[in-house]
Image 1 (cartoon, rainbow, N blue to C red):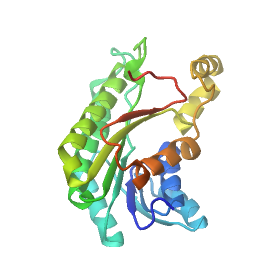
Image 2 (image 1 turned 90 degrees about the vertical axis):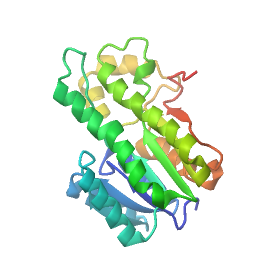
Image 3 (image 1 turned 30 degrees about the vertical axis):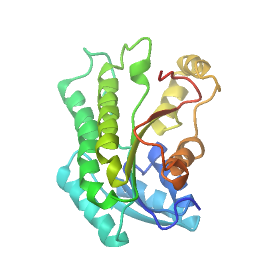
Image 4 (image 1 turned 30 degrees about the horizontal axis):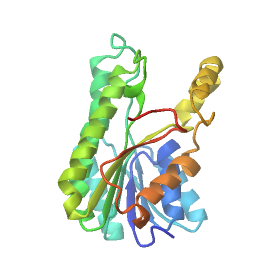
Length: 250
């Protein structure tokens, strides 16, 4: 197993991509703190991990609240005694044209995205030193040829990419690697959109060279597990699209 004896904290792990990442990390031997706002979803993810023989801890956490994140990190350390992996996945997404996105929606996206990522990276940094790995989630939305309806969303995700690159440069000497993934995956939100907008969904899938949307665990989670392992020990400060070849990051 790639991650035996390592502890991971994954935000937004009650469903979708976060759950897929949590499952994949646990499959490689990591002890996983499964965090999010809804206890029932966290318990369901933890039960899946335990059924497979893994070790999981549900921790209710609101990434828009600094005290909640402080308490979350404290609970993880109290239970497991160490922390080597941080995955910042949870975020509220402000979608719509610039005229449609309200100040409150954009502020929520900012607070739950780049601000939460900034805060949680700094909270975890002292415990990640020596053998730590941070994986943050962004999006290729800013690379779209037509940004209509994606400006506010892309702005929050690009901020996360900038923070990650800075962490990679500033903390790499401490033994902390920081990278970004930009995934396409069958999250509940994307599945709903594809089912309710079949023509648009078909056109979207047609722009993916592999002609399919990724699986949360098999395609996204397993890559994250490898990225957090010694097999990727020299990968730092990178933005990696997990999208079947759709985005050209240049």
